[in-house]
Amino acid sequence: MDKALTYSVVERKDPASPEVQGKFYAQAQARGEAGIRELSQRIQQMCTVTRADVMAVLTALEDVVSDCLANGEIVRLGELCSLRVSLSGSGTTTKEEYHTGLIEKKRILFTGGTTLKNMLGTLKYERVEQKPKKEESPQP
Image 1: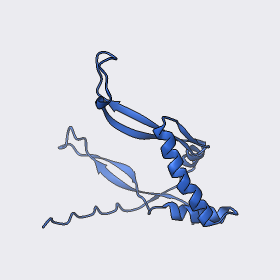
Image 2: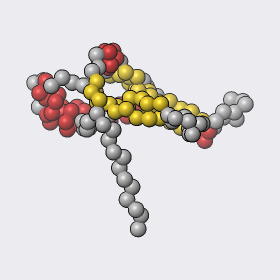
Image 3: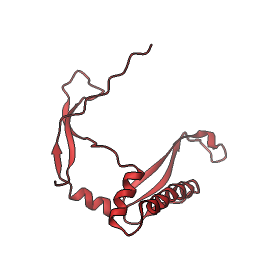
Image 4: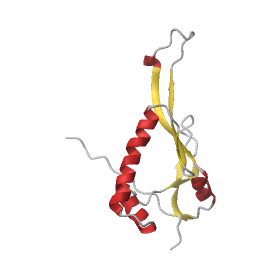
């Protein structure tokens, strides 16, 4: 079976004009998840190391990446991607007035590298029905 990214077609309305007919767009549909165990099994099949060894390295990678980002470093994972911390919040009129309480949002910025950009250039698509939204259960 060829690899293909599944998508469905969904209507999106302009929040500023909810009475106007929306337009239809593609929305990627996940087929599932690949957690650290799944990744380690797949990597084991491509290498000469055991799944346990791969798990150990991936688990250590989580810790090292977290430490590097907390230290203000940009993390470059080869041709895969780079990660860095970004801050946003309120500003002040002078440098002296600024304090860390004004930082309102912190997030990790992910930038795809050559490997991921090349993958995007070769994507194939398969249209599927939109996944039903999970119904909220009534609160007792």
